[in-house]
Image (tube, rainbow, N blue to C red; front, side):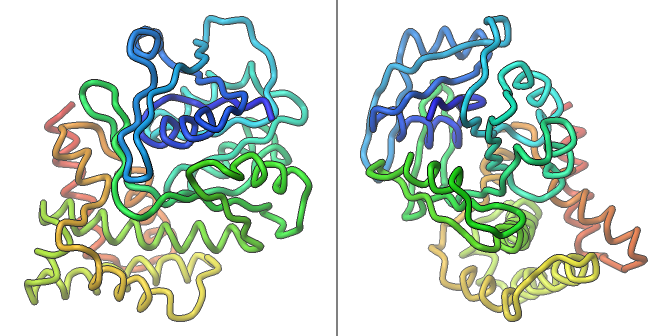
Length: 305
């Protein structure tokens, strides 16, 4: 498949780099500064699954448009609208859009702007960040993505994408209920990023304090309640499963949002927690812990501009 990766940051750089390492036809749509950096240094991955340096094909929005078979949409949510405008010239009638963003609010927008039939469901589990030299740093045991059709039917295009990742140093799984998988991860991310950014601490420190551990459980319950009242297809016992994961996570585990905060970078607070608060108010629910989490993120965002 002729594949375009939107951006060469932590997520796009990691999965695109693994495909490029395998020898697939991969192109990165990047800004001019990132293009210059990649031409000079290559795409550098430092990973628990093996370090690589590869020389990627890159284009910018100023290049002549042509359609791709697959576009991996891995931008941060606060760049979503601009990213959609950037990739529109590269979307053909049969282009498949694979979003790997956290949350769920991006899905209706992508379907509306890029074509409902073009967009499939997707998410990834990988701890990756971009350092100040442009190197993608991956750590930990998670190294996979999950994809599926929103109508839950098998399809040839889903099988082709799975085949694309075969033999790459990462894993691509097919889900027959991708919407549920996305909501499950949303619950996990909203809870973990909420508490780690609020307390500016890793999970080990949070669960070692009775008060912060109680806040963690309360936030998880609030988020789950909002999602269930909205009609999200959560499975029974998913909150308990997530809480068990939090309790067994390595002491130093941090949400990527906290890592961004520690670097002074913008956050996806509006997309993750702000969207949940919007739903909560529309449903006439009371979500005081979620409000505290979001207020903390708003204060941080106001300080960095």
